[in-house]
Structure formats: C-alpha cells, structure tokens
Length: 88
Image 1: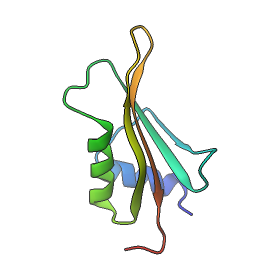
Image 2: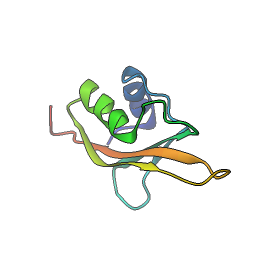
Image 3: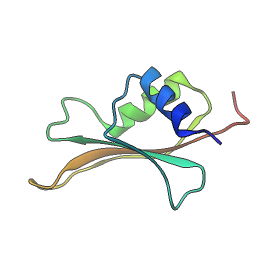
Image 4: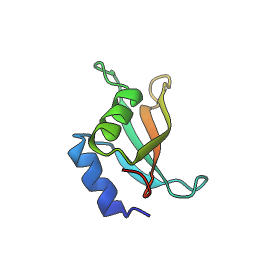
C-alpha cells in the first residue's frame, strides 16, 4: 500500500497541486485528491486523472468528477484512485 509521501511524490511528478490529499474511508487503499476552483480555466478532474495515469501505469482511477456548487460555496475537482501494486 502506498504511503502519503509516495502519493505526494506521484502528484508532484504529474505537476498537480491539489488542495487536499486524503485516504478514502469508504474504499480501502483508495486516495482522494480535491482541488477547489472558482473558474475552471480549462481544467477538469478528468485532466487531473489523465495526468496521474500518464506518470504511473499502476494508477487505477475509481472516479473523476467536477463538483459544481453555487457561490459562495466552493466548487472542486475530485479524483479517487488506487495504486495497483501488481501492475506495471
């Protein structure tokens, strides 16, 4: 199972800067990245997921979604993924 330090290194290699990195409570071995936005500026959760997969073939995306909220609540991109230790 990947450590948070390994996940942070993977994220940095993918040139992503999420606001939060956490383990999933519902999905064993899964990680959740969230990046808040006011304007998307062409970004999306799917682009974040693609960047993760591009730097490590062991990454398996569980879900990638753009969560839209009405202002003043914060909208965010969310990517849930696991690291398949047996792949790659």
